[in-house]
Image (cartoon, rainbow, N blue to C red; front, side, top):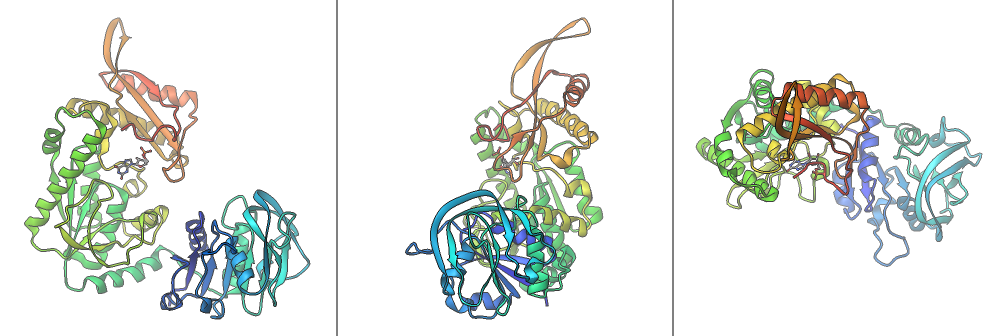
Length: 509
Ligand code: XMP
């Protein structure tokens, strides 16, 4: 049986991070809202529960609370931050408003020996973020760690296997946080671990087979990582009953369409329909300069082309989507649903009814990449940097024209080549070229030139929500600029974008 830890989410900033840390430690973890009933939790057969932090105070009327039966269920539990205050309050301890504490603090051991603290030094730095604090422990608990701002920084009841920490073991600023989590999972709960993407496949493939039965499925490939990996795993489960429609809008980067086609004809040979629709997309964008209008037209046409292909194939029961964990909002797996939005482009019409198959909905981006490798997709596809659904069309200010597309594609290839050659791609979020639609005068040899300026955009980010411009070495910037101007006729000036997000966005349009 798969070992499973449930993270009960009290509205934490860090619930996803907790789940991810547990998985990094080799145990499958899943997030459930704290409002889940006892029956819902039991149905998932968890070996342990982790109660997350949350913004509330246990004394506020309406503060989130658990089904009481969870506390006496005998399932080992670890409370974090609000999770600790909740446990203390619910089990008969006292929680009081204290001085709020945000940031680093020193945790000190109290002399009590406990498996949770194995290998942890006498004093270490932890990351706090709380208003209330636990003033007196519930019966049966021992004080394991103290700190200046929170007299109880950790407590535990070894007999009931209920533990709690006031600080955040899941963040990197907490020293020994991973050890505490590892001790909880392996020493306190007694799990054996070993969960990895291989075990995910072993469980997920039969699940997809059971859900789909002898019916058929369709997937829209966009060129991105998520849809490719979703297609590959569903193909492993259904074989020829999955058809992939690759709508090639003509705005992909150099070599990308060929790479997708090769991956899905050679490595993961599924029924693959490559729709080359560049002319239709160019026609739909003729004369359009407004960024939102461009996005809308691309999105609508993408869906129309996909729909036409779907109709040619006849009735299909399931639509595969590469939805990831961070995109998942409440909607149970396998629910019949009218699809309202396509992740990359616009929305599917209401009358297109499929059941949704979202095999990646429990995974994080880095796990999806590992799964893709496990499924045999090439590294170049699996490690691809994020790329917007509307593609190069929203990286050129002004009208999308074939000549400008070619210019941008060639310049983008140079940027990618130089960044990859510099060996810094792993530290970056995205690196690409933008045509800002500005013409400038230059001189090459003895000739005056009048060409387009090109912007190089390189950013660091954790999730794309915020970003910073990458502080590239001047020598590297120079190499990029020289290579672009000499290799891409038509571009005579190169600018580097030094805008963070906010106030800028990563893409230009
Ligand atoms: P912005 O430009 O909003 O981008 O800072 C944030 C991240 O999202 C990507 N992006 C998109 N991805 N479809 C996508 O799948 C889109 O329409 C889209 N627009 C932006 C962008 O590349 C960056 O990683």
